[in-house]
Length: 297
Image 1 (cartoon, rainbow, N blue to C red):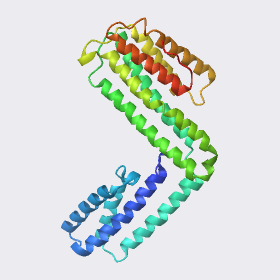
Image 2: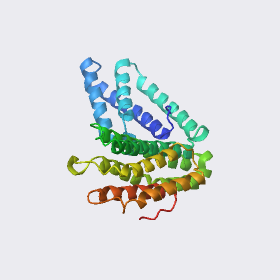
Image 3: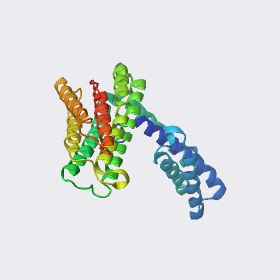
Image 4: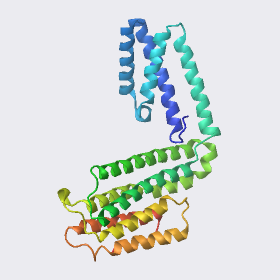
């Protein structure tokens, strides 16, 4: 079940299937190759290879399935006891059954708070990116080498966690009786959170366009610092406020996004038009995520 609430049922299935596959491979190859050190090396390699090639869908995600396959094959060969494979198979089935019982019926994942926490991480990451870009503009300085890459990687990492949280939330309300009543709430939240993918693209694109010109040229005019920082502050407030967001906060965020977008036409000559367009796109994506109206300039 692990210590994380993300995809517990998937991990349980990966572990059980990996153990059973490893036992089958270990027993079959032990009879053909014996239990020498060389045979063990061949069996472990074969177990890993078969696990990688046979991992379909979520079963093959990550390393848990392959690791359990190889580990079970190792135990079957090294213990070299009659019935060791069968005993371990029973252990895996009983343990997996108990874990599924706990994860589905007794302690199912609370999907709404899981989604909220994953969303918070994405928003805080993007807030840091925009605030950092605004800081570089204010100081008339270029970003440190690798800064933008690190910020983009962090946003993508948090977005991947959000994707896993969405899968977990859907699974929880589908199979856990204690969570059935939340089906409509989770469906609505997931539909709203679909807007966050576009927000990640526009916010990271805005930071990139603002801090470096085409082919690494000069940054955008410093006048954009205030408006980019304004959007960063709005994202920070959303990310640090527990949902549901109060109406006063949503009104303030709407005012901030409208003010930022209204400057596009006035402060965006020549190359800075790209920055202005991304500023407006980011403001619109924030508005879409929060469900507030936003009129482009």
